[in-house]
Image (cartoon, rainbow, N blue to C red; front, side, top):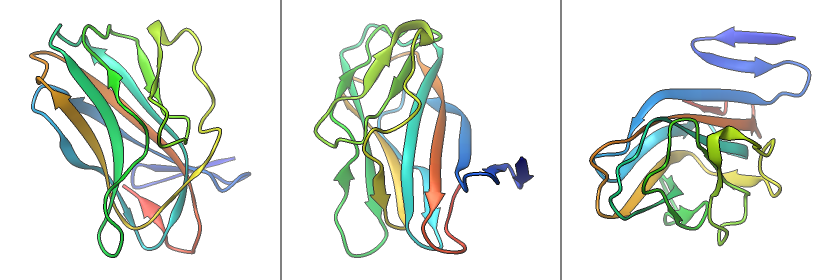
Length: 156
């Protein structure tokens, strides 16, 4: 059974939650707070970047990081992935190992169900980090799957 509240979807059978952003523009450099964790820590179960506008041939590495609002410093959620010439339909996903690069699934042929190693996230931002040259074209829909660890913890 699924419940929808204010754009957040909850699977009542597992307590997993899902949130999405319709269009992450990849042409302007790094993006702070693509998602915001609030109300307490969550367990990150999956983070998927689905290319909706092809990425130009500018050399660019992309990764994700957790940027807590207090206490800890920003922490890599994955290693760099070269995204130049990513095509519409490609999906990048993280494994949960901070040193491992995102995995690229060409044309979304095969996409893992989520992190093989779930990640503990404190309240704060989940940021997209673009390094090297900014692409001149490129956009993506991004999907984050999580489980709240305390009552009231959300990701938006």
